[in-house]
Length: 617
Image (cartoon, rainbow, N blue to C red):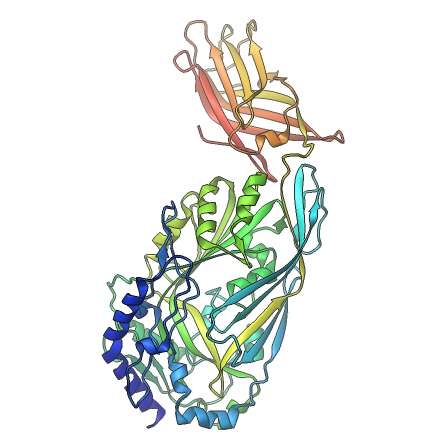
């Protein structure tokens, strides 16, 4: 039997046994609980036959089951480390053609490596290995960290991690190396990478690693692109006579057009959450060690690392179908010597769907918040349920969200609401269809037909994380002044007023009383009031970190009076032990008080690095 007949017969047999496969998957799903690996042994989908059959179905037809987050405000479906039965390529290994290619090309792939020097000076080394010992075991990311002792007033590490140098922070320095083992690589950028990821694409390791994606300039033999997805209508393969990039993309379009257009795809969403410290660290986690071309920590988060902040990436994936391309009977190229080129690779399997990468910058505003954040940490990847709940509970501390969509209705940068982050992501994922799916995952093989894995690692870098130290001698509030810019109808001369300032615990720390001032505030004037509050005790800056400090204004009109204020500015001045001062202004706009509503509570909160921020009232 030639290889084309092999593919065709496999697909026919697969359709006959698909019902049994799906039923087995349903039975297995009853035993799955949160946090367990899902493993379906290859025998569970096998049908006794003298002829091997495909035992692999892509995600959309696999019946992939995941546990929901119970008793939690986050309604995310989590699927991690799902191990599927044997793939089309594993079936190919049982054919005479595989044995022939082994005899000819077994030594052509020589386990090459490439070192990426990232934009921030960090380095990532990827080593590609044929038939690695970790093949079929999913992606494993390992963090090797040597903890340092807590330090105060830390200086820049020079490795992309910075500290403000202010007192009142408790910082810990770790010496970290991140490594990853994987045979299943992730597509991370539609513009730079995804268009070059398609079944049957052939690249040398060098042209793959450097991001040029140049294919050998040689005539190719016809190639079949096929799927085993049960929802396809019509032929489940396309024969590509001249398999260059454009013609293979045409074949992919033909196959995707054979899927239903108005179909509710019940595919599980795979959520992962990563913390990153630099470009190399981020690249190895997002691509599963497959590449680092085009990665930038600063480009992803919009800033360099600040030790008072944490940088999380929410990685949400939904895979809909998988396409395969195994070696043709006569080889990939009309000239067989082309395939003897050292370190030549083919993309043999590509899974299509939608992926959202949401990069969050989070201010750590308290020691307890930092402890809660670190509690989700486990071997370089965060517990997805705990991390998503942390993000939702601390949405007010998210200072930026840079999100990117691969596949789905909106390819490229997208806007996400930090106060409704998970629902926003799930809403976008719901728009995935067979027709707008893009490459998400892929596997590489050498010319002999062996799977290629990546064993990658970063150089050692310094990770410095800081949290506010509740026991430190933080700056003390020494002055508090109020400025009022008037609107069209401001304070009458016989209206008296009061100011009260409360810290995050609701304790009164400053006040001002105007009981005998007969000065009016002129309409449409600026810089009225100018009053200084009397400070009570020695309130620390740290007393304003958590919760919502409050500034309260009350008027006492003599009869009727509307006090229209275009802006109220409260300036808090803190003095450090060394005598230096820090000015933190906070403003509220369009505030009106009257005899019917003579008092207002104006709330604000503290953001690391930016000072105080007014809240809506």
